[in-house]
Amino acid sequence: MDAERITGSTESARASSRKPLQRPSPAIVEQVERLLGGRTRNIRLHGELARLFRERSWPQTAKIIRAWMIWVIVLDVLTLGLYAILLPTHTVMSMLWPASILPPAALVAAMTFLRPRALWLQGVLLLTSVFFILLSVALVGVSAGGEFYERHLTIMLFVAVTAIIIFPILLGWAVAIGASALGIYLVFQLHNPGIEVGSAVAGTLFFASGVAATIVARRTATILAHKSFLLELRDRSRLAELADANSQLELLAQTDPLTGVANRRSMMETLYRFWNQDLTRTRGAAMLMCDVDDFKRLNDSLGHAEGDRCLVKVAGIIQSSMRDERDQVARYGGEEFLVFLPGTDEQEARIVAERIRSRVEAASLPNPASRVVPYVTVSIGLAAVMQDGEFVSAEHLQRQADAALYLAKKAGRNCLMVHAPETAQASD
Image (cartoon, rainbow, N blue to C red; front, top):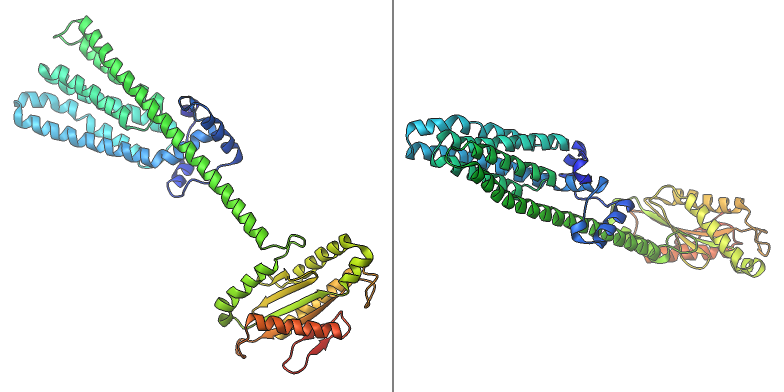
């Protein structure tokens, strides 16, 4: 398979053991849908999909192989110990040197899978180690002779079958393990003085059918693992799409569709959070109520389309006049904009308000029916609350800004009025 010929990336594989599966790219999603749309038995992972699967499965694969290798060493030592108790010394001594091949071979394989390596290197070291493990098991019986000869060859085949079943490895690797075991079995059986050549070949063919069935089962397990991975990718993609859709809906629910700034609901949520969490940690706050002068006259003279364009441009001017991302602007009504300035005092709020007023005036947006000048202007009401002053709720501060706006309109428009307890101060 193509997936078996692609080398893995060491760094990316190491990263995969530390972080969850990321959102797949559109190209990967397309491949996933195509593979899941076909028959399960036809699933094959290629290119990037194969790499992602290896990254995802490597930690588990490495853990299984390391554990298997350690247990093989333990069983080898225990078996030799048992033989030392039950068998004659000369028989045990004949088993000792071939049995000593197994621990180093198993340790090499275990160390190979301590950290991610290139796929070809993992394959070479694993298959070489397994070959020497199988050879060691076979040689133990061959060296002892007698009843141990064929018994250990059968045990060797059993060891190979368990490796094929347990190791979640590439199909080509599993085939190589099976072929190595059958090759060792056939060679030693052909030299077995206790059986004829025909029996050796027949026995090899018999065990070959079992090994082949095991490899088929390994292939099925691999395909099912691939399918599970594809389903996970698809679920990840769909969850990401759902999250994006929810985020978009939430953004739409908090944004004025015409001007693109926050809507009234979003501003109320911002004020609620500030007054319940941040007010005591800041040096105060201020609100500006901005209203486009003679907006109804603009609509009547130039049309609602021009009125909408005017609101969009005014909203952009107000947004660009903010100090930083902390300041919030929202379309509060038809032609009204509410500006919230957290952590500011009256003097700093005056600067922001005057910047808004002057920039709107300098933009010279047409409003020939205006009673002020023949272009768009805004009137602004300002109200501020200090941290060490008397507590004022958000609703009350808003009403104060609205009252100051009323005075700005009454004073002739295109001006700023600051709310005061008794009087309102004007600023041209």
